Image (cartoon, rainbow, N blue to C red):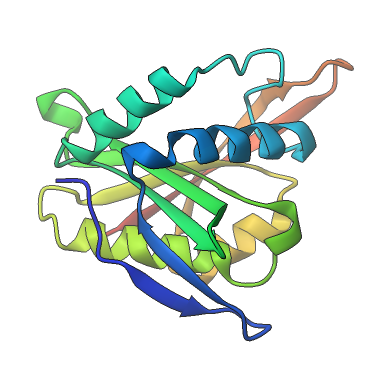
Length: 184
């Protein structure tokens, strides 16, 4: 099952947040969080126009993840608000089931305070407890140096780079860095 125990984390500024498994009843809050993130983050693939998820679709998404042993969705919560979200999906075919990718977002007002690290630690601890998950992968904008620093700090290594993988509305290209963490 894609679940973790509820864990409190003390941030760099002394505030305490809870990191826990996303629940179906979080669907509306997760949607609102994602809309806020998409509207102010230059490092996401999804644009505001493309984000058309409904509450029912979000509920189905969470339900599928919670009921699949190779998937995980977790939130960071502060005073009842979702301030961080991470979802991991392993491969659906036998030959790639041992590895998967994740995406992570942190509310702009909480960036740089330890939320991303807390979410990553929970993901990696969960992955290590599932012996069939041997590799956790991600793609990150090459210009997102803060995220790359964090990933390296918790043990991810650079595997490669995709040249001009992203093209924005102004016609500018961005490279993606491929990173991985091996659990065995």
